[in-house]
Image (cartoon, rainbow, N blue to C red; front, side):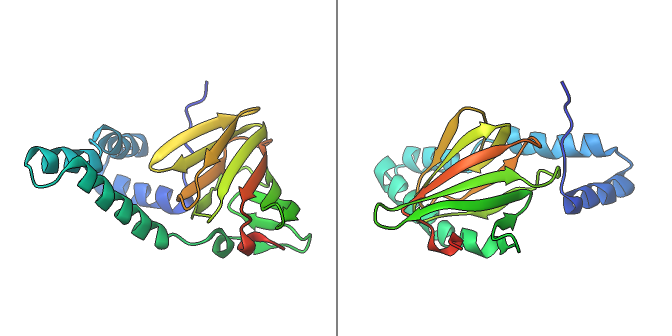
Length: 192
């Protein structure tokens, strides 16, 4: 089994700069950075624990403030339409993906896309959100979905649902990855 991590050019460049500055190899630097993130307790849970234990706040008060913070953070995430470009073939592209709208029915409130890997770079559809619920059905290959600070690897023939107004990024993990994606209600910014 291959354990190769494909990095974006800017990240790889920064690692090479740190290699030159420290004399460590890229693998050791990358592992140290990733371990520091993986092993670190999640800040929201630590905050909840400290605030509730100190009596400064109840769990329900913390939950309410947390929901407000998530909503405010979501307002700062770009809509999907800001991240795509239209091709001459009347498809949309972003990262390593190409998308074709198969259906848009405003009456029943659904939009359907066929989405496939357009290159082997595994670049994601960067963090974005939709006002509707998105369901990804993996027809072939595998996809990496980062949602709510968690990475989910989904492979054919499984599916994954992303709630409305939830920031997420999606990357193809295989050259043959093909998805069927539904958004309900439709994302007007993604309609051709």
